[in-house]
Amino acid sequence: MSNVHPLGVRPFPRNFVVRVERAMGRGPEDATLWVAHCDALRLSTEARTCDALIERVRALVSLNYTGIDPATALLRFEYETPMREDERVAV
Image 1: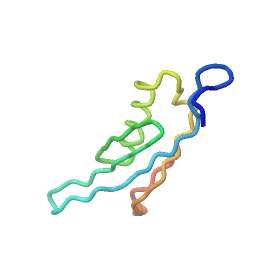
Image 2 (image 1 turned 135 degrees about the vertical axis):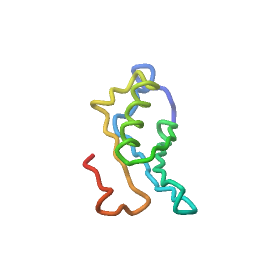
Image 3 (image 1 turned 135 degrees about the horizontal axis):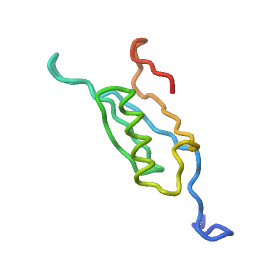
Image 4 (image 1 turned 90 degrees about the vertical axis):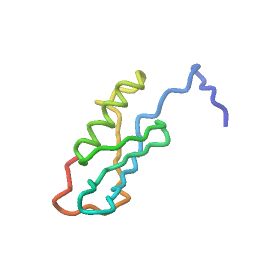
């Protein structure tokens, strides 16, 4: 498959899958971290809450990819770790 687009440079896709996992601490004093990975964006980051993680991913997209508008790009968050009801956020 060629990387050459008929009009020149191949544009970024507008849809991205971001895989999200919960990294549990070993003891009660260890905090839980949420980790996000997106192979298409070569992005990996973490945050203490799911809300913070989503905001961080959007901020990194807007800072690192000038050809992608985070307001119009579809970032689909797929959760590898089942979430408890109190952790669910509207995305």
